[in-house]
Length: 204
Image (cartoon, rainbow, N blue to C red):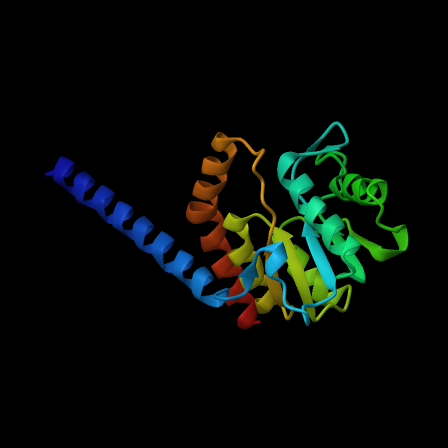
């Protein structure tokens, strides 16, 4: 009897987890539908502020994912599509000073320092979007990240008052292992938490 109860409880947990993943992924997809584009697909009237989401750095070198995002920022600036770039990340020593590394990369690739604004307290996507509105007065923006993350970023920024368009940063040089890991983490952890954050903020 006890074994049967444990089996039924385990089955219930699996079904509940699957329902949570499906529901939150659908929420994100619906909320961001039609608002995630490739860099070459940006409309002429796209916002001229770009938010670059931070990611892993090591030994003061941008990692594969954040470097791909920064490369999109550089390209869009060179095309005359941007007036302001907001670098947002964790600038603590433990995190490798993400924002400092991001600024240095942009400047080294020809972006004038005065175009760049730094948010050293963008500890996650929700914090980035919240602070973009509350601390930097941004009401609309492009937000660059990888495809698995872009819909969630758009949904969260909307929730915090920033009308966002996601711009996909291709990462052909990123490892297959990291891509699989990030897609799984996105579906199982990041999207459920993001939906919770958005709902909680709407009720404040």
